[in-house]
Image (cartoon, rainbow, N blue to C red; front, side, top):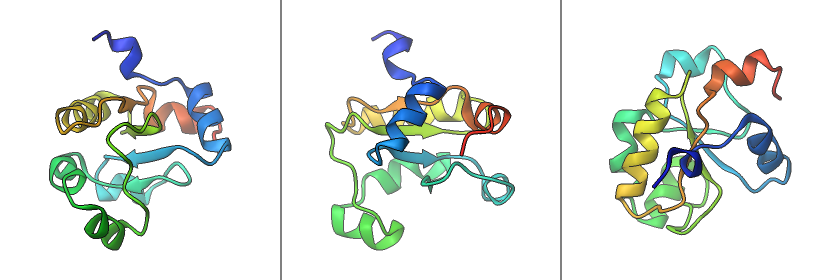
Length: 117
């Protein structure tokens, strides 16, 4: 599988979030998230992705307050600060069966530089 179908661009992510249909997971550390985050994202540190994305739907909703994405969701996106941890998290999610999971390779750094809101 090529890298391009695993990544999502800034403009595509903005469009997805504007529709209200994106499921964005911030995999940075708690201290990084405290300094700023992409609105609507949920925080699952990269080291917890496998465990948390393996929770059953009820446990996931109880822990995060949102409905767990389906395995075939095309709107599941992971991101970190600059792309590397997001790519790792995307691979972990794909190995769990989230076949269409993608990485926002620009990360929070690009989001904040472009004034994303």
